[in-house]
Length: 233
Ligand code: PGA
Image 1 (cartoon, rainbow, N blue to C red):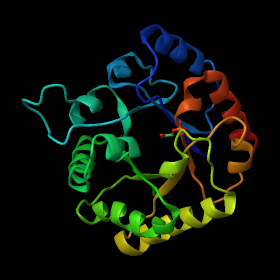
Image 2 (image 1 turned 45 degrees about the vertical axis):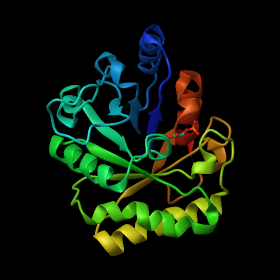
Image 3 (image 1 turned 180 degrees about the vertical axis):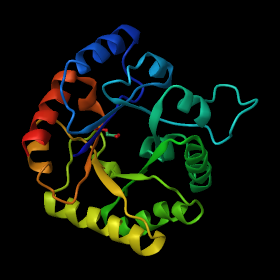
């Protein structure tokens, strides 16, 4: 079983998401855990009977006067099973800090939603220092459920994909680091320019538990091809 998480970011209009939903529901992928992460405005349109629903973001506060925000309990009421936290776009563009990430992780945990903590370096030379700093949030929250998505920042939306040996090395390091320091076994996904061509190679990385896909996730045809590869591998 592999996780295939589809991060739509701020894309698709209402008609497109309805078509997407219909097309995705025609695919048989029982062997895998598929989750769609649409824009928050579409969460209530998603049909969670066939695949899981994920949110792209959550508020640091639990509820109250926070205009424009969406709480973890509201996400739970829309059947969200997962929520991305610490995506590199949120860290870079919205200056999301470790402190905020901790609050989000806790709110999600309280709402019964599995956080997908995104980590990844901008520069290979300080990869492990950056990963340690990003994973340090785990020391202040005791999470029952957690998935890590490793996405090197220079791979997101660029077409640059690490080689299999390098990916395997980082994934094994993340798993061991979290086990040694936080006594948790976690699933780790890989993301950054994963598509229906390079999935053939990426799918052979044995330590990987799945993929977080941005651009290619907007096409159900591409998702179908990716699933075919994952299923046959
Ligand atoms: P990408 O995005 O597949 O378009 O590179 C991945 C992500 O940002 O999660």
